[in-house]
Image 1 (cartoon, rainbow, N blue to C red):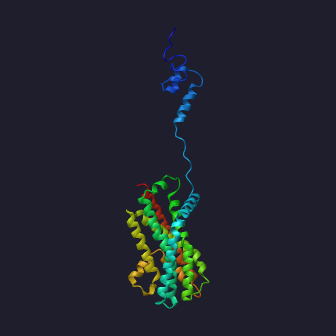
Image 2 (image 1 turned 90 degrees about the vertical axis):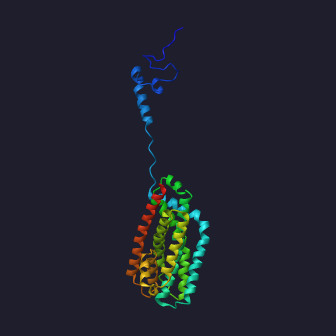
Image 3 (image 1 turned 180 degrees about the vertical axis):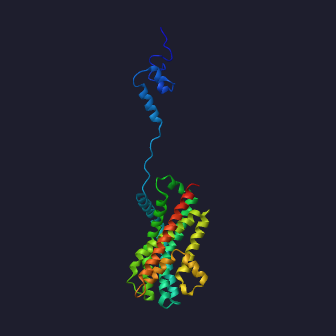
Amino acid sequence: MSVMPAVSGVSGTTGVPGVSGASAGLPGASGVSGMPGASGDADAGEAGDMPAPLAARARLFPALVAVYRAQLSRARVARIPLLFVATFQSIGIMILMRGVVDGGSEARSVVAGSSVLVVAFVALNLLAQYFGQLRASGGLDHYATLPVPPSAVVLGAAAAYASFTVPGTAVTAVMGSLLFQLPMANLWILLAVIPLSGAALAGLGAALGLLAPRQELATLCGQLGMSAALLLGVLPAARMPQVVSYARDLLPSTYGVEALARSFDGQPDWWAVCADLGVCAGVAVVSLAAATWAYRRAAVR
């Protein structure tokens, strides 16, 4: 009985049935065998070592819509009671100010500031708390693994939280107009004031929540921001000291308040209204860009 060698110079096999030299990893096995197709097997092996191409990254708009729907469905149950709190708070402030302010420009400032305060409560305060909690609990790791742009996460969450402010802001503006006997013909300007003010305040709230080193500090920053919107937005600007008026100009919601207050005039200066809304839009772009940068910074840590 003859014994076959371990490696045949003709066939290039290893002596194990069904296992070739190329698959066993022996060097030069394809050159020894000289059989047709051996080089093709080697090429196939080299091609198999190449990593498979990754899937294409999600585009901004579809990813934004997906994040918006997810945030809207998750926050619907938990945020609706807080929306009622924000609305009742703003209406209560207007009732208290009714005993101090009779009418004129001061009444317009009170109604406009109280209406935008609903936006500040939800978009600034609650969003700062949400991103602070998301960072503290490690929830940012979930979004970091998704193939979505960071801007889609920030914009989707900001848009979802700003959407909750629409009913409360409209109700507050109507109630204030009735309380102070202001004209309501131009309340359609809320269609521009709510999204622009909401975007500016939501970007600021998201940035505060993502940059705060601790969740408690994020909550504190959100509360301080809402307090600033209350004091600097609701109180008439004419009664503020000059130093405080400078701080009022730095608040993103101020320009939304000014645009809404001008719309209560008998003949509004629409150029001034558009200028205020333009400034509010510019601040919204800057604040959302800052929130996107803060998200990238927090996600890689």
